[in-house]
Image (cartoon, rainbow, N blue to C red):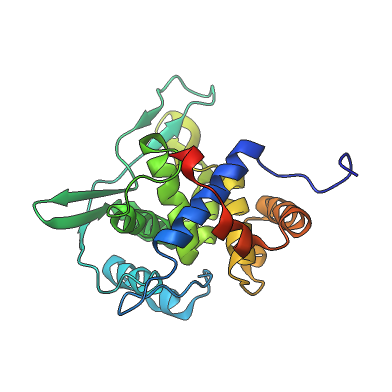
Length: 256
């Protein structure tokens, strides 16, 4: 049966880390209460509040509320635009990356999130960026995630999935488009986040099973990611029938 059973869409050690990260988040933020209480639910691109947002600040406020962070103080600022090019042999131009899609910093006592204004043309990627940077704000006070400092950015991506924004992160992890700039031609590659597309989709499946989320994620994923989602769900259904209990009992000392 092992040869023909469900297969993971990612490496086993990466899956085990995702599970450890979910267990860590369960213990650190899953039981929050009060005005910033966490109510896990899957946020999708057809969310009415997100669709109604017409400016970056409005969208930022929607993401904060959905993440249960409405009461957390944080300043939003417009950052620098980023351009990232991949040479395809059509020209001899170099690969370049000028700035990040978003940044999180604490200046004085003020947490500041800056975003690439070009993302206003890509609202789903802007939501993913806001979710990732707000996750920085959240885990900033939680200590080190499983795997320590080296995996802190990866854990930030996982936290954004845990907060319900996994579809946005998975769909925005990599985008390709052809460009022409004078005599130069090539492919423009927009990349964001730290976890791979397959890892993000697997994390979405973990979220859905952990919180018994209603179906809906697969409909909104990029076409080539739908099979990854189905594969992850089949594996979880077969190998992790009681995921919530398994996460609550998981020993995290090995990841310290």
